[in-house]
Image (cartoon, rainbow, N blue to C red; front, side, top):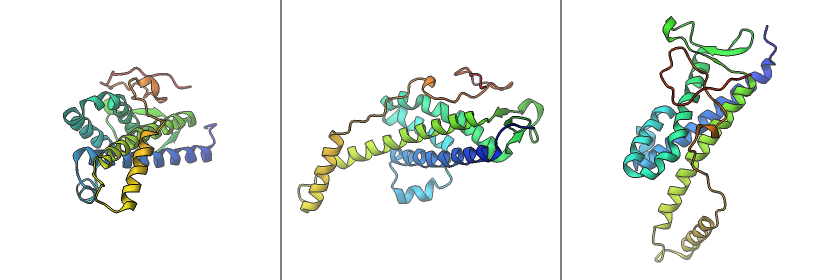
Length: 210
């Protein structure tokens, strides 16, 4: 019998799933911006795009259009891949309390493809913190690029109200104190996926969870 408080567990699980969806929105919006597609067209073209595939396409586009940003998002998207894997397992295979909470595809996978992840309250908190950080980085990138584009527009012939708004926007941009530092190391995230028997991805070693 599990000693975990199931009510607290499912609250933490719901919080993680919700934050993942929010981050996915920011990732897909970043994809739209880099692709140079209007919001209206993006809703038609990218309506079924999910976080992991969007991140792969973003990386390829950045390599062409903005190589300096590739390093900034290298570890972001590596971490996203790991978090997305455990999120998919939780959504499609659920949680088993035996006795501690875990998620596994064992009921529907062949032996060589079985994967199992512990999902304690501590781990769910780590996943939630990391996906919020990923979403924040993507949101900040979009905001920065949109402001840069806005400031390029010549407002000299427009009504005073628009010119004033533009001036305020420029002033706010120049006075921004907070800058998101580039994430260049996996150690800046809290969650580390435990090793799986058939994993081929050895980019970063797992850490033990209590």
